[in-house]
Length: 73
Image (tube, rainbow, N blue to C red; front, side):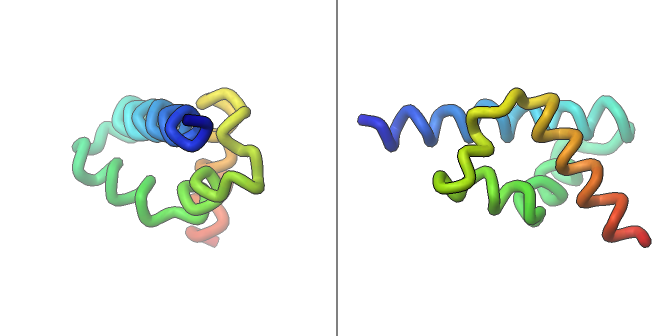
């Protein structure tokens, strides 16, 4: 039961991250999904030991944006 609730939190945050990317970058849903699902942020979000799922989607999105900026450098 606890695992289901944690998975739900991750799923909701992931959906928000995808939506934020679409809105901020004017990209397709497929492109946004590819970015999120292949990110270190998504990996950390799914690692229940990090407790990243407790943070707001906006906070996690800032984390993702920082990751993407660092990849560009």
